[in-house]
Length: 170
Image (cartoon, rainbow, N blue to C red):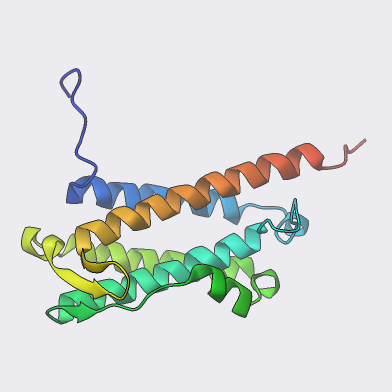
């Protein structure tokens, strides 16, 4: 790679790689958490690792559904995703975190396979979002990757805080 060359963050190959890698990192951060740490919150308004796992699963389900609608229909109406409302509606503290991660992984593989099979024109196809208007597959993929990175950072910060507040073992 020539010096100074930076890949285009909107290039489909780059987005596919980013989606795969961020998902893998999320699985590592969440998947090997100590059972007692899965539901610990470091503040009243903070999420636990289990809640993060439930949220990324729910968001991935919405992402996949949006892609399927856009690929299936011209000017498809894609639903709004209110992750905060869904998190309050569902109790992420009570889920089986490993089951949520398995479902997230399954959904992510389905999303990536769908995107992998899309040609250049399909990446530009749009659906109609109720608040944002027309949004392309490319934009949805970029935003999904940014969402992954946000929760990856959140999970890493939480893991560090939990590790530093754990009682020392003799």
